[in-house]
Length: 139
Image 1 (cartoon, helix red, strand yellow):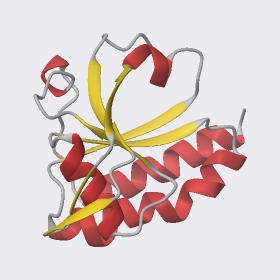
Image 2 (cartoon, rainbow, N blue to C red):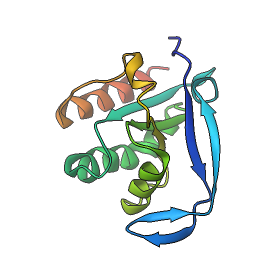
Image 3 (spheres, one colour):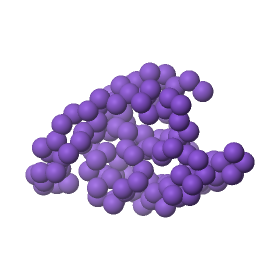
Image 4 (cartoon, rainbow, N blue to C red):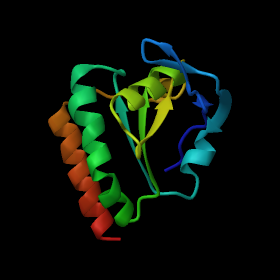
């Protein structure tokens, strides 16, 4: 599957805490869809927003818990996409202690507008994880 090109504005090295779950001091880094997807097997799950109750308590931790199992099955990386900027995504992952799953902030919804927005329940997303695991086992 060819993924439409998008450039994401990410942040690296924001370690200076300024309060309210906000960190600064790092630098901007552009990461595009070719770097993320080309010649790789990746899992991408999209969520409606950072710091929302179900996303923070079940969805992101669920993928974090299954990360090593996905990697062992041949997945190169697991990404969480949400229409938030890099500061919010980094703060959210820091606050929820997510260290393995990678955050992709789609702050201007450029990628999401390309048709990757979806509405699903946690049950639907979990069923997708199980389908991915089953498919990976067959590789």
